[in-house]
Image (tube, rainbow, N blue to C red):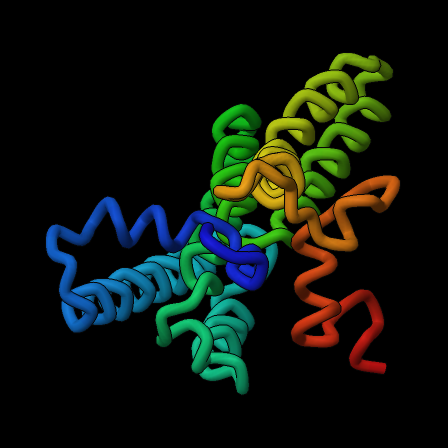
Length: 208
């Protein structure tokens, strides 16, 4: 991350591309990105169908899969973008959760958060599952487990924001002075929210 604008994107996809790219060629990097995101999309479709069978019959599951694959937003799944990897890890987490493998589910959701900021909402699946088990078993243990899992899911987001604050607000330039931006003085400085709003006019309910 060199400048402020680059913090509009979470590090998951760039790190994945860097790990899978063995050349500095831009063409090779783009080709690798297209291959990775499309492979993630195909895998997501398979997992989507598998998971939907746990709550739907075969007929509805197939229809849901068609809507998933041919939605108006499908261009984001086939381009070099974060949607496909994020969907892949979210669905992986849901499948683990349906099999009562909550630690693996939390890890999968946490990896998803490395790709997109809204990955933090996946902690809601853990909390919902814990609430149902707590009511059924009349125990607080599931709630405590869900809290730990939720912290793990949110942690990549927190670390990303801390890195942004240190990188842009605390580090000094060649002249020995700090060149912090206006958001650095906020009570809860958040580079991601600021960049999304300042450069793209995005935010909660901004489309209304």
